[in-house]
Image (cartoon, rainbow, N blue to C red; front, side, top):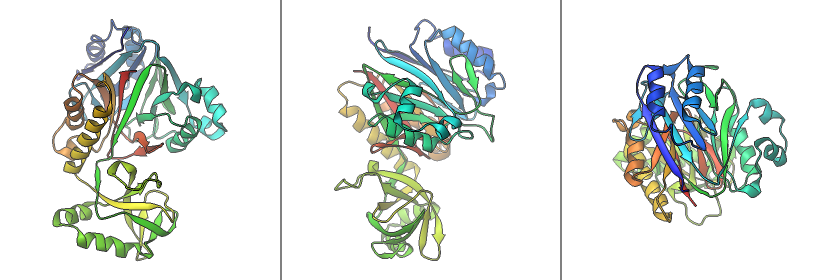
Length: 388
């Protein structure tokens, strides 16, 4: 049997009707894996929603979470009632769901502990989809542990969103509803998984090597005060880039220093927070001497062009087009960034027609840059599936 992927969406404000509408196109599939994304408009009945979806679809495995805005197969439902379901029938693929909480992150030591807890080892070459609850787990530390335990694996996902404080988001595992931690799934076997991480920025100026830094503050670039270098980049920029720099400036940290030439996808983009001690630049990331950085700007045009370029390049490199995909977009994207809805799903559908996609707007997007996994902001993180 070939793999089959399906996605569906309901915008019905009535929870019972929304569940029925979203489940109907998938009910007869008997999928190996289902992901569901539910807006907070359907609370506080999340327990009933999860159990109803579980019963109607008869899936072998199900994970999901709440989201501020929901992405369906052909549109993005922003800050309105939405329920999206994504289902995959993947013959021969080993699907293992799991739960991780903060106690696990604090107490587990060594890769073998993670292999035992998740039920899969690096020899299985697993890839992961993860959905953390941001108020209750140190996701960054967990991702570092998983990267170390499973070198070469792709880890993609999004942080549950829509809550204004702890205990408001929900995570779903089969017919269970959780308020904290992380739910995820590992996939091993005859399925190809490709990740596309579009950070929505473009570099300006040229790369610089940090020559003096402490913690998250860059004091010198190429032996000169960091603020002096930044002023030089600003003065050399055109009027458009100068305006973007004044609206918000970002710093791209090169992930792999072994590269001879750096392209946009080689940077981990973080916010520039301000000036420290008259000439230092504070960044919301740890920095170190010897690291290469480049200043970046972000606007809707840059974000649009980068996503199209990265996605087209990825699909072109594949032997066959993807059949399914999961899309995790920042809740600062959508109409907030592009001035109109449906941008990210529109780009995916334009580049990969027929690919069954669903997702949600996350409070942090998870995906790889280089050989490491990071939490991003204002990013679109996409995972594409096809039969190997």
